[in-house]
Image (cartoon, rainbow, N blue to C red):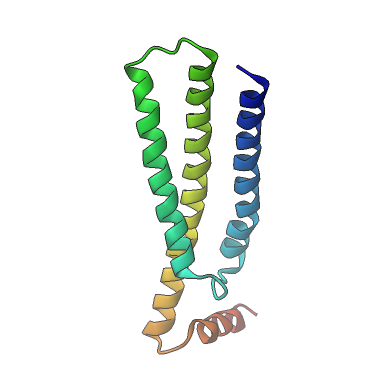
Length: 129
């Protein structure tokens, strides 16, 4: 493997880790507070969909190694890079999907009571205090 390939691989792993770490506090906050008012359902839906598409691509790329033996350093880099991509998009997609479902449930509960999501959230917090 060349120095450029090693650097590109390292940067892709660092980027995947940063993306996962940056999403985690938001997911934790949504679960602690149940506050999804500032979240766009469409944005998280598109993020989850994009991650699923990337996962499909990663899986298809990894499947080629079932038929072609890994012989060179480039093959190993592609194989490991495929797993890194799959891992990051699976985790990001899962977090986006969880937040999207939480947003959908909160919006549905508010509409069922004839309230906006903001009114519903304020009402829920008054009950807790």
